[in-house]
Image 1 (cartoon, rainbow, N blue to C red):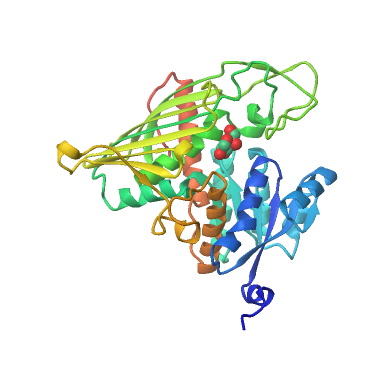
Image 2 (image 1 turned 30 degrees about the horizontal axis):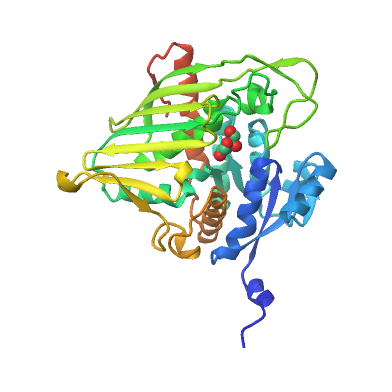
Amino acid sequence: MAQPQQSEEAEVPPLRVGMVGYAFMGAAHSQGWRTAGRVFDLPRRPVLAVICGRDADAVRRAADRHGWADTETDWRALVERDDVDLVDICTPGDSHAEIAVAALAAGKHVLCEKPLANTVEEAQVMTRAAEEAFDRGQFAMVGFNYRRVPATALARRMVAEGRLGTLRHVRVSYLQDWLVDPEFPLTWRLRREQAGSGSLGDLGAHIVDLAQYLAGEPLAGVSALTETFVRERPLTGGAVKGLSAVSGTGTGQVTVDDAALFTGRFTSGALASFEATRYATGRKNSLRIELNGEHGSLAFDLERLNELSFHDGTEPAAHAGFRRILVTEPDHPYLDAWWPPGHGLGYEHTFVHQARDLVQAIAERRRPEPSFADGLQVQRVLAAVEESAEKNSVYTPIAV
Ligand code: SOE
C-alpha cells in the first residue's frame, strides 16, 4: 500500500523560505515557492515559513492569502531566525544590498529580485558577500525570471547548439504604458532614491539580461538616449493596484528616466538595439526579442509566450521561412512536469521555474544562475547606459 503523503514529504528535507516584501513581486514569488515542489520532484521541499513587511495587519493578510505560516515586521528579525534557510528579497531596490548582505552574514541562501541593486557599488558589495558565502556553502541568485519562460530557455538551447551560427543582431524591446497619463500618481518606481533608475532598471535590466543570456556573451559597450517625459506627478494617499503610490498632497518630482533607448556591441562584434519604456500606448507588458545569425533567426514575444519563431536559413529558399514552434512538448525546458502538449503556461510559471532552479542548485551545491556576479554585470551595463545618455549618446564601454 502507498505510504501516506505526509511521510513521503517528510523524507524530503525542507528548504524554509523567509520572504521580505509582499506586493506584486511578493505575490509572484509566493506563487513560485508554493507550486514548485508540487509540480517538480525537488531534492528539497520549499516551505513558506515567514513573510515580512512593516505593516503588521497588511503582512498578516498577505500571509493568509499566499500561504505563509508566520509573519515578521522587521526584516532584521527575519534574517536572524533559525527556522529560515533562504531569504527572498522582494522589496524596492534601495534595501536589496542591506538585506542581502545581512542574510548572507546570517548563514542564509538568498534570492534577490532584479535589478540586483540601485548602483554598481551596492552590487559589488553584494557580489563580494555572495562570493564569500559561496565558500561557506551558501548560494545567491538574482531573479531575472524571463530566462525561465520555456520558449526563451529553448531559444538559449538552440543558440548554444549553433542553430543560428555566428550572431549578427539582437533586437529587443520591453514596452509598457502605465505612465502615459500625466495624472498617474508618483510611485516609488519613479524616485531615484528608491528605484535607482526608471524604465532602465525596471525593464531595461530584464532585456539586458535576456539578450546577454540568449547571445551567450556580454555586451562590450553602449550608446544611449534617455528621457523623462513627465517630470512632476500627483501625490496620493491611496494605493495604485500593484504599484504603491507615494502618499502626500500636491505633486512630487519624477527623478528617474521614463524611457531608455540604446544600441550595443557584443564582445563578438554582434550589434544590438534596446528599447525600454512605460509610454508605449497600448503595450501592457510587451517584451520582444529577435536574434539573427548567419544560419538562422529566432524571435520571441512575451504576449505569445508558448511560442518561439525560428527561421532555418540553411533550408532551400523555396520553402524556408519563419515557422512557429509551439513550446509545450515534454522535451522542451521545464515542460516534462506540466500539462500534455498544447496546454500552455503563463507569466506566473516563470517564478515556479525560478524556485525550482534555485532549489536544485542549492541541493546540488552548484552556483545558481543568474548569480550576483551576473546581476553586477547587468548593473554595469545600466550604469554605462546612463553615462552615455549624459554625454549625448557617446559610445561607453562596459566596465569589467
Ligand atoms: C513593472 O514595470 C514590472 O512589474 C516589473 O517590475 C517586473 O520586473 C516586470 O516583470 C513586469 O513589470
